Image 1 (cartoon, helix red, strand yellow):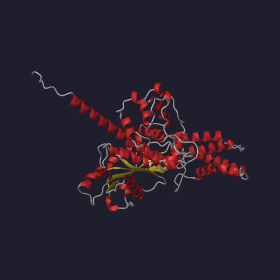
Image 2: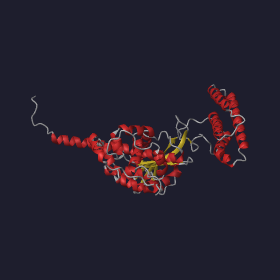
Image 3: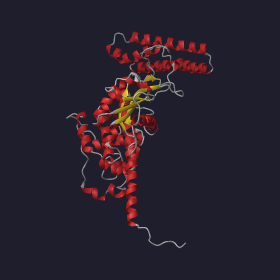
Image 4: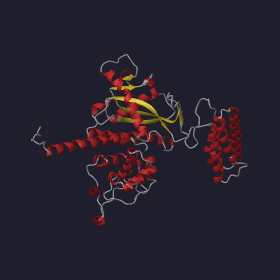
Length: 448
């Protein structure tokens, strides 16, 4: 059902502490909360809710919690704990009085991720509107952009054959116990020891012995798969309950190190992909590819992110450029005149190929274009800030929707950090100007 509105004041509110009396109303977080168009966000997210059922939490509270979480790089638990003791967080989410206890359910953020996963562009568009209204971004800055891709690592450990085989054996045994399927042997204890010994042999470079332990694990996993299939053959409900787990276990048992095609790198996150970006210190990363679009020049408030999107299937960078440019233009409402990319976009499919300039390109690069092309590498610093100061460096959310949500909200949090910094700088300038007008310099001169 549509979210409920913020509760109105009660008759006993005279004895409660008003937030506007205990906080600094000129604080940048307070100014930002007053500038956000919460009513527009409510209308933009109206399609995510039905007309029946229990009313959801208010849009300002839940969206405010998401914005605070990704602005300050907090986890779900941390942002809830800080909300209770931080009056500025409570004011940002629409509270009128200081709350000493959490009046909402902690599971609400997980439910809201599922609801608003397809309407995240509204939040990114709102950050760009705020930047424009505060003077941190001009509309002319949106005409020339820089596009690049990076890897958003998933919260998985480095995949090894021994670890995946042991995980498959343990998960199948756990599922069999949950559904009451008696196994001839679970191989839980033997698999744990074999995986441990395989790691020790690999560290000692005794690869023949390591291979023996891997064959032992594959053999036991095959026995377990066949045993479960025999005992669930005539039961439709059990076959349906074990279908996904048996498919993953069969994939792990059959896949080889150097085979082509799709491979399973994590049991709990099967959408994880192996991506190589050519880094010497990190040859392979496990997650999904994310495309970021920023302004080419550094605006007054900084270099803002205009578009962010997660791509699955490890696509070629050049094959994502058309979609990225079209969605960026639809999001900003401004046609892109020039786009600057790196050498990985050779053979791209942009709608206007002669308006795309690659690093190292010589033909057609002169004057202002040459200066703007040198600014292309500034996007690397933006990606670094999204990973170190935000959540782009490690994605803890589930599924492909979680990948998309984390990528877009990392961009939203980065833009909000720039806006907060810009508002704080504006406030300091205003105070300095007022102070200079109040205190006039003395006309007396010091004796020499």
